[in-house]
Image (cartoon, rainbow, N blue to C red; front, side, top):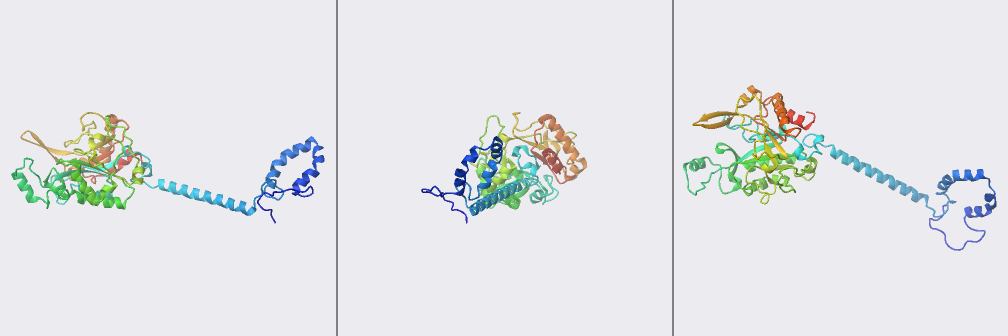
Length: 412
């Protein structure tokens, strides 16, 4: 039976003690008379013999029960297995796509391109309006792969700034959907310039549709670029974000605006997903992060190339348009849509071209978009064009999605 693992204490008689000690005393003389060759053999094999004696009764010093050794060995093996499983889980997590592609996960937000629609809300019904920019609803756009949305917010029931009524306000009130013009949930609508032209209802309704998509697709990042037509305070928009539930996804940066307007440390797509702050919101006017921290001032972070492109267009420009200071920002909007222009009493009136005109001129083809991108590369170098923006994105050969993949360097 094996010895106890405790070290034996107390006096030991001359003839007693462990066998290896008696062997050493009895063989001392012969050891001293050993030849040099014997000492070399001893040195060569000593370490092996010591290791072999570690688990035997002849081993010097503390003795370890073989059962203890077995248990420790099993614990070590189990810990390695747990480590390997955890490592595999981490790798698996990294292999999940971000906005459809694993390659995008480690990239900062400002180094990724997104498919964007201009006046995203402006779709039928009703049909045949001159102010339509899209054929598909926001819900369908999401399902097709659009990930950035230009939204115009307009006060549904205009209020006279001088406190008096006028004929325009009176007529507008006849068509108003708002039950209470003072209630932001009722008064903040998605309209094109005026809700008399096209009214797609309260902002909160469209935000709810987008929030439901984000609920069902937890690895998708969405961007809003809001045109504040009616000059709302961000606190006027906040109730729509809160009521729809989409505010819980909104990204509020830790960095503060800098005089350089660029060089911010944007999170990667993976970080946005991990923090579940997958909605980035910009607004062109009156954004104030001290009031609503997740509605960001567009011109602090974004530049746009020219948008007033008049049909027919032979070559789309790519110089910086807004803001007009010529100072680059971290993100670039590539406007690739066209207007029909009429001149009345010396004033230009621009209206969106029709889906049929888009198709006839192949504006949305990959060839047209790629030529525009090459023009932009001559201006912006290898900078990513972050928001490739189209009217009637569904017309053509899917060029918007193909170009976005090209810019991102991923397979279509």
